[in-house]
Amino acid sequence: MHKRLSALALAAASALVLSGCTTSADDGETGALRVVASTNVYGQLATEIGGDRVEVTSLIDSAAKDPHGYEASARDRLAVQKADLVIENGGGYDAFMDELIDGSDAVVITAAEFSHDYPDAVVDDHDEDDAHDEHADDHAADHDGHSHINGFNEHVWFDVHTVSHVAEQIAADLTELDPAGKAQYVAAAEKLAGELEAIEGELDALHATLEGTPVFITEPLPGALAAAAGLDDVAPEGFASAVEEGNEVAPAILLESLSLVEDGGVRAVLANAQTGGAETSRIEDAAKDAGIPVITFHELLSADQSYAEWMRSAISDLAAALRG
Image (tube, rainbow, N blue to C red):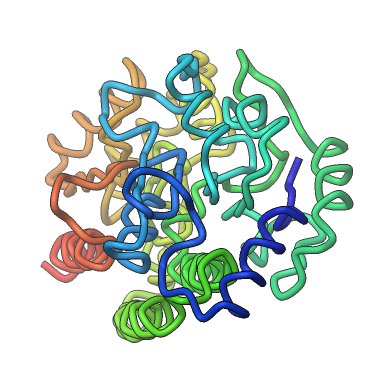
């Protein structure tokens, strides 16, 4: 599934180098490389690095579209088939991409495989993708079309370190596809790397002051961010996974969760602004009644917002709530 650069693309790139041509490797109307991302998080990263040398299509760019149950359209399929580079999250989050990628000659970046927590992940050598797929299949659990790898938090875009590796790979693959744009890609990637390094520094500072702070995470989305900030998720086991799968939380777990919040056993409740249900609403209401802050996180970027801006905003909200 995870194909590297095709022989045809390699030949085209080589021809560009030999001829000294300054145009893109793509022969479309605009001359730009076609990039398709499963969500606008990865689409924005590609835009930031590729600039005017890329045309980016983000299949999920609205909160009205749920990646867990998204059904790809014929237009989506055509976009992927015509793409030079495809960026997916992987890990079961955007499983609809699997069928779209099948049969495509595009270079594929799977963000989840850059996470140190990914089963048998090889961060610096993605030639072992087939081995990753086999191992992932052994650990996958399918719930209503949403295939997970057991024990793995697929929301890797909230792990800044993982995103740093993804950005490096985007720059490397764009350069291989379009050698003439190397200087632009490298400069943009280095600028982004500096921003992400600064964000990691902010999280390290939070970790130093907030380590061990108990919080209740209603759904796994902000888990990586919370861990980087040193927070301790004390939500009873089974609550978040049930919410993520759209299942009812077991009554005993719900009662334990409500008691924990009502008794002031947590400093904050961290929730997903785009998913939830009756159980999460009860937890949030109990927190508000107890004077405990509720911090909500989103799965997608807002319009005209960079990844770095988005993460700084999330970190700022977290710090303000817990330091207040």
